[in-house]
Length: 283
Ligand SMILES: [Zn+2]
Image (cartoon, rainbow, N blue to C red; front, top):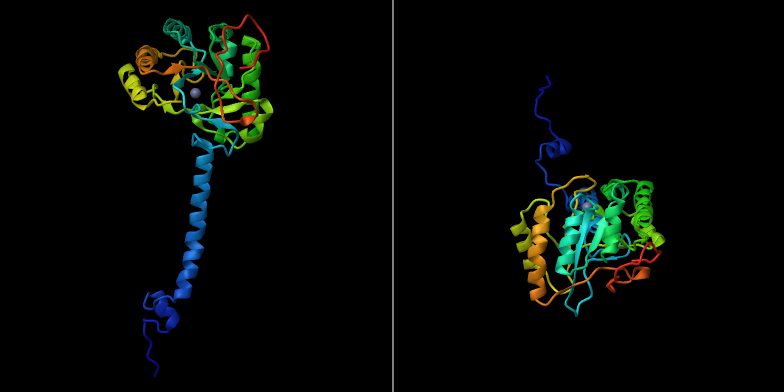
């Protein structure tokens, strides 16, 4: 008579039940099979994140995020205009005797060409901030091209100035920018200090900026809200009135940005002065 048991025997079955240790060679193979692809994927993702968002990255096109050291020059920049409140910013900056740089959206320029023109006529630099303020890393290369080209045309048409400065919305770049920026004569500008002014009150914005500004800082604030026509940036405006005199007292000098052609490390910036009308002068 043959006795049958429910417990399987044999090396293979014991391994299934975890009774045998794997050999070092099998363990190494398992590590290679599982962890190496995971590590490579993580490294690739890290590389993409670095190229897309890290301020000093140049992997996806020429750019800069601070001014050359050695002087007390700093730059005040505003994104997302022209908007309903932009004229108030122009008045405040004029009263403070400061020239800044405005990164404008093409759609806003088409809606408010007079305000775009007023920015340039007041002596500020003007830059391209895409047409509709999308997240560029998720846009097709064709969409990225259209966003930048339409905005170049809109700004040129409204102000007579063809920008040489570009700031990606949310600070997020696309690999499509690598060839496109040089082709359009643009240099990418990030920031050294961002005020987080979309979620803070005036005192908090001013405190954050004043704590972080060093020589060569590029300060990023907002005079608009994406491509919204109406936008309350009164907290930012109040912060600007606090920030500028305090930084001047510390010896800093505010300068508008302008790009050095050919992708060289930036930037600065003869004061563009006040234009004498529509022209092809580049900024
Ligand atoms: Zn923006």
